[in-house]
Length: 349
Ligand code: NAD
Ligand code: ZN
Ligand code: ZN
Image 1 (cartoon, rainbow, N blue to C red):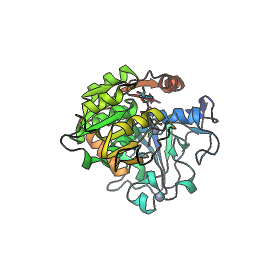
Image 2: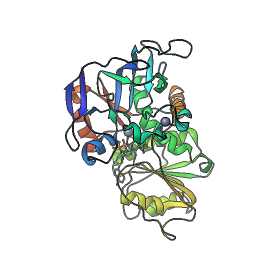
Image 3: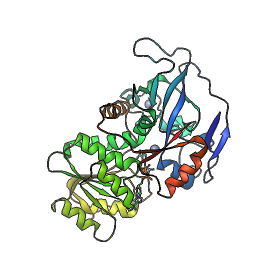
Image 4: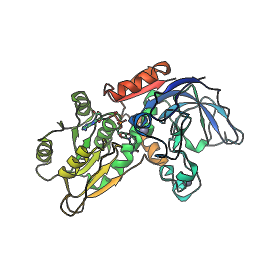
């Protein structure tokens, strides 16, 4: 089968011929219907080098996947609550040990043994979904998607799940009269705005350098759109009636966006850093509002993925996608790097 692989740090991805995976005991092979192209893959391709993450190339890219169950390994239950060949599923992306306290709560993103496991999941050290078939190490990592289009389900597993988790931890700040600022309105950001609109009473201020992304942000539910620049802070403060933002989601994470986030946040607010832009926020007594909580978040939990899928099944969120075949996956990443993707790019092997 064909698979788009990261073959070495700082090298262009290659479409390679690989043997079809066979499921071992407890494992499941998925026929991939859709794999999202995440900006994190661009960090993997362009920014990362040996020693930065606990895994090494080569591996197949694609950590945002959905498809149909193709083959079940020995011992995978087909009984009550089990899976059947042909069943449509989304793949929960962060693969932990499955046994530690965090994993048993469904938070495999924060597995206690991630360093020892030495991989983040399929597409992050192990073979991912930019291929015709993908091996998933356990059926506990699969979520049924019913009639949901896998092309829409794939982005939900990261572009949907990551902002959902980041927003959910701040739900108590997002009641009537509150404001959330979303910086970066691409794959994750446009879903963040939809999730804020669907699950909170907050008004959403969208910030992006790209006017097309701001237009998408408006249709996703943002009431104010702001381009970064000298008067961005003032525009955002005005949109919050001078109070400042209750929650800022920085889905870019460079120096400028972190500084903007801290400048527009409100005392007692949350500044949540989702983007892996490599920026630094200097923190001292005077540099951030009083009692501002600054946190990074990584992906989300399995129960949260089920909630995200519920939202999509009810039509309350819907990723904006552009679809391309596996043969054009490398070009798709180039388009993402040039900022030419509206919403999420999805590859359909
Ligand atoms: P994307 O390329 O689809 O979207 C990024 C958006 O940010 C674009 O619209 C771009 O115009 C905008 N942007 C870039 N620089 C900007 C700046 N300086 N000011 C304002 N807007 C700017 O990317 P994505 O797939 O949504 O990923 C966004 C970030 O989130 C990436 O850094 C990615 O690695 C990271 N990420 C983190 C997690 C996590 O678990 N924390 C999960 C997935 C992705
Ligand atoms: Zn990702
Ligand atoms: Zn674990």
